Amino acid sequence: MGTTIMAASYDGGVVMGADSRTSTGSYIANRVTDKITSLTDSIYICRSGSAADTQNLSRYVTWFLEQHGQELGDEPAVQTAAKLAQMMAYQNKNFLQAGLIVAGWDKQEGGSVYAIPLGATLVKVPFTIGGSGSAYIYGLCDKLWRPNMSEEECRAFVIKAVGHAMARDGSSGGCIRTVTISKEGVKRTFTPGDLVPVAAGELPPPRRAPPVQA
Amino acid sequence: MLPRPQSHSAALGPGCTGPSLANPTPLGLEPRPVRHASQAPACGAEAFVVDPVALANGQPRKHTQYPYVTGTSVLGITYKDGVLLASDTLGAYGSTKRYKAFERLRKVNDACVVGASGELSDFQFIMRLLEELSDDDFCMDDGHRLKPAEVHSYLTRVLYNRRNKMDPLWNSIVVGGFYAGKPFLGTVGMIGTSYTDAHLATGFGNHLARPLMREKHRPDMSEEEATALMHECLKVCYYRDKNSINRFQLAKVTADGVSVSEPFALETKWGYKLFQDPAANAVGTW
Image (cartoon, rainbow over all chains, first blue to last red; front, side):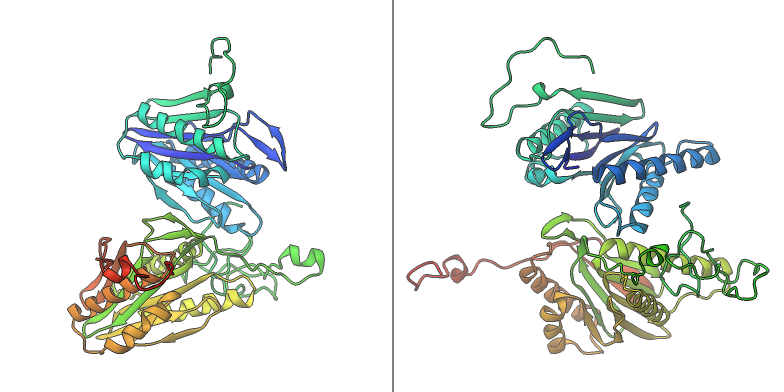
């Protein structure tokens, strides 16, 4: 699953973004994948690496979080979800190929973003990028990132960065999905493939009918 | 697969987390369950569970890993009043300088600090083992805590045990502490190599920093002299190690306890005329 995934925190929550391409070798098995999966109502996970590994790991984490939430009598913390995912990835590190980003909103910390790269180190970060496409946007993200952006600025940053990665990484492409998580709840956006910012050297697609509602 | 405390079972040896069937054994707190099977080990875990993968193929178990997110050198010196450990705060991903704010020097208790290079997820695992031991000590509430030499010895057994199972923790660790009026400084490598010395380093630090330490170190150095020496060593590690950044931390352990400094940067010198124009007297620019 070549991919571009990212998550960035802003003043009041987090924005997570991903492309939508799943490839088996050169064939695009799914051109509209949703790589941003929910673990709870306010914690989501971006998945890169082996689709099977990350799908199953996400299901385990969702299951444990649900039980934990019921015992706790409250929404689980993002840190708990991230730690669970990391423990599972670490204990099976020789068998899994999974690069994960866990992000969400909880009352204790507000918005938080945790990166779990290959090898299953857990690290809390203000923003992070992952997947094969991320290699092309380190410079861009270093340049554009600022702490305490507004929600719209943060979402625009994520869409621009994922768009640039898709422009140069063959394993990333299709559409850009974002998930914004804050105290108010969860907001999903969907940027269809023909409305993704046009890469340098490529042609804008022919005009289309009004965009489909997300 | 329910997450549980790591097993400190004697059957599996230090540092091995058994399959989830192995019961965790906080030291001495749980009453020993009655063992009905005469062959069952008395250590508290279920009888040793053989890795089913090994049985399946008839092959010996082989799990040697590869490091992914790594830390570079850790430096350590003893001085008159204690020990100083130093490292940068980079988690590198191959050649990519990936995570620039990763703390690689961690306090174990008021007498001991541990620093690690190598795979950082394995370091996080080692810290978890040490935290569990410290928590047990805390719950015992008898004033005892792990001495630095005990931490060093424990980590030696953990790393050597994992090496014997062909599943190493891919780290080089420095243990620094101050106990009974004396500084302690020891190191453990990923294959279980373990020793103590007046000054130590891991990785590139061995080649870049140790010579400086051999020149300038004295056991009765003052804190200022020791800090100045560390800064020199960190600087040369930054100049000459590609997987490093100019963001460091210093950890100090003395009779007053442990303090890990806020991250800082060092001045670097590039303004020599011969640096600007190195091939002034040559034909090409080489």
